[in-house]
Image (cartoon, rainbow, N blue to C red; front, side, top):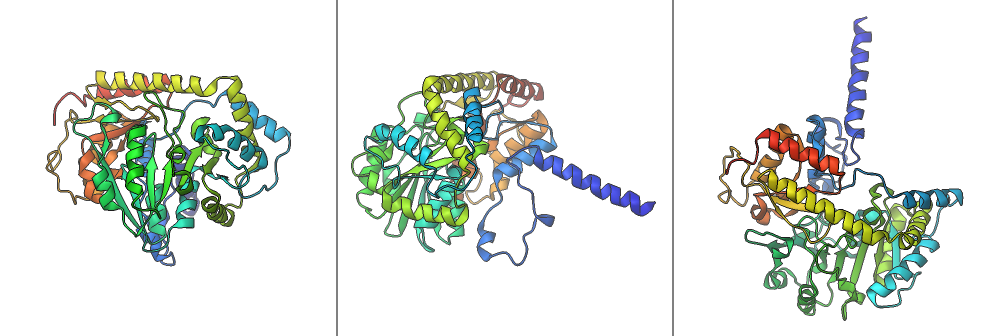
Length: 453
């Protein structure tokens, strides 16, 4: 009887463990005892644990509203569902070419040719991959060698750094800076710092616009300034992450690959998951010159071979239906309303949002959250370990005490620049109005945000 009870308890623990990690698609199941096998490659030791997995697990533990998770919690549009149903009914179930299903590459080339102001070849200048993260990984694998350098404009999404680390290359960060930013346009790139970071060792410059997490939309003069600096470094390829292209609320989205002299040295990345609120589809696409697209496709072919055919055709169908529904304009207006709603609620909760021009993330000033921390704000040493920084502590107390999860902004920086955002947290607003309102009520009830630190 005792052995049966012990076995039942073990099964219950396994069941509870599965519920914990299946409840959110961003969760990462830890290895046994949170350690890797001694047979793992040495390069795997360079990959830091994901901040997103850490705080999603904390959110599950405390039954928190997760405004850190970067995906919508509402259904995709009905016409997108019909686009998928149509692709399934038409039996697109077999392998397709590694560079992308012809129906989708033709659709994408036609759609983006006007945007790039050139006639994009559907066969050689566009590649369909397994989401934007896969595009970034494939590009780094295809173009970067051990010892090379990859320069990222900070704060940055961690995918380029992870891929660079795995290649045995070096990531260098050039930070956006702002003094008491009120809006995302206040974040500025120092072109002198960018110039100093680039060298003959640099293979890639990683750019993101609209920008995660600041929401900055790089203006045409700002991109032209970057292009001027790059003229000194003709061998540097620009990896431009533009997945939030349809979420621009102020200004206009500019494509660096469309600027004079830039098409031949730029890979521009986009995402059906972001554009159609279907992040689990994992359909991304890359535009660029044939000599850069070819090695990227070879990497994708070696890892995935091809992106699921049925979802590629569904994406092509969705683009066709989107025009009929004026979808991208309506989606932008809907997301702008959510941005404004969350900003207003945060202000009512005595927190100060930094209004984003684009994307679906918002940085928020947390200096009014009372917190006992060994290092007063602006006095923490620059080499303080990441998880000991004030913004990590704030996001933990928000989750544990208020039941609302955000992401600490310092996780998006190289160690020497993490002090820049010790007072900031990232919130995601692509959530239902009910979710945003419930988060506000929890913060107010917690009493956080009522006192200066």
